[in-house]
Image (cartoon, rainbow, N blue to C red; front, side):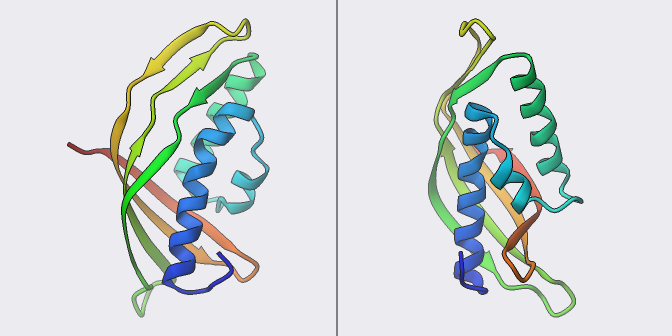
Length: 135
């Protein structure tokens, strides 16, 4: 992630997405917030959902990503965002209540993930994330 090129953007996108199940599992949003731009709607929704879940004493388990393919592009001349698109499989996950009971369980899911990252100088910042189911 120290690189300021396409390879660095790919590493940053993968790292950020690996934080997704971590924040739901632990409630620790430190790194997520550090990498989230204030205008990132997806990023803010995750913060809100994680805070609500953990405030109620709940948590999630599982849900990690396996990346099948990744493609990236440098910013266009009139744009400052690197685009990183990933095909991933998200492992099954479970949501637990404050007593540890499973209240929801999700299946293994195939996803198409589209991200826009910005090299902010001191590090990468996620500007947008779109996730879609794929066959």
